[in-house]
Image 1: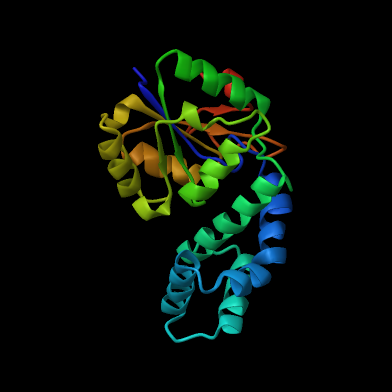
Image 2: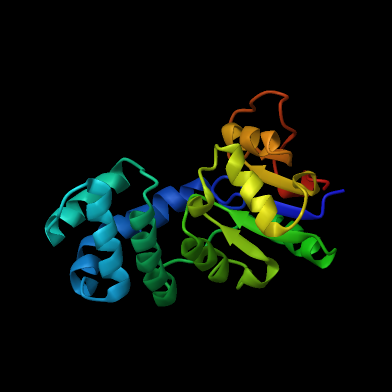
Length: 224
């Protein structure tokens, strides 16, 4: 029996277009000014050092900005970039520049599952901070109390079975008691290889894949 649900965000609870058409452009437009204005703050300075370490050489502030923009344009999943994007998005959410998109069917089912005693967790390539901002400032209000835990790529890559083994261990449940939801087949393959149940969300005109995972068009059709 499923006791916990682990969900992806992009293409699963949230429209991919929100991430690519709202969040990413906002971060790209503001990252240069944000880095220059906050470079002396310890939290930001630590991430700038991490950018230089990732690049393998010392970088000036302008070179750090160039590297960050290059990573954004290449859609790189680099930890210091994700951390800085999260800081910029935090300011945008607080200023009311946007709210976090969550599909209404996802809102309803997440609330129903939590009320039924199913534990809810998030696993996304976006940082935990970015995850909590999206759900904290969602279209449906603050959804953070629904979730018991948050995981990002610090636990491992989303296409690696060991990541899901580690998540199951941290949740404290056998993998077979956990249902993983995602729109990416390779992520679902990794979760299944780790022993989890899986369901693929096929939204917004995405093509169906094959019969290797159950596929649904909305959370309404999921029966844990």
